[in-house]
Image (cartoon, rainbow, N blue to C red; front, side, top):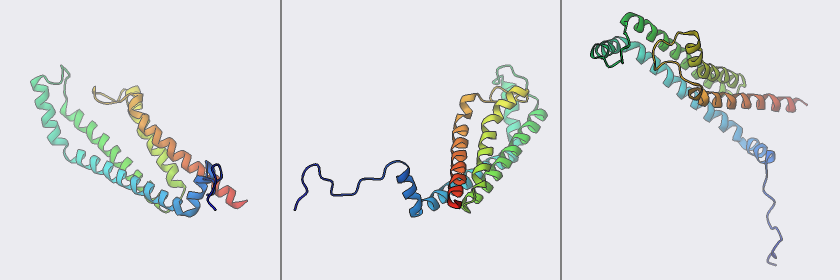
Length: 178
């Protein structure tokens, strides 16, 4: 007999937490960790590669900035090549370290360990606050260094997401024990 109007023939859809829990119960949790871990590894390798390439090309960039300074293209700013070179190398060393930590956090996330998300939270909070700290401490010597709060917002958003996943994993492990 055909269903009449107003009669449901299918089971009601899962809503809210039930839907999320159902997706994780069916193997979605494994895929989530795989995708997140792979993204962290790719981001970490990319950051590390940018840091290494910046370190290796410091001398070429010093020549370019010296020529720009001589042409007056730096808007009257004085350019000290030795000071800038050491400054640039330190920045690239920090970027390489952040990249290697991010890739390491990705490997830990791939292994489904919650500590990887906590490390990712710390890395992205550091990346969001680092330019502001440079500007406040006076280490940012050039106009293009030391971003604003708006430049840190994407890092803060990713850090918040990592923290929420970490807290969710802690909560799910506590409920499994009970």
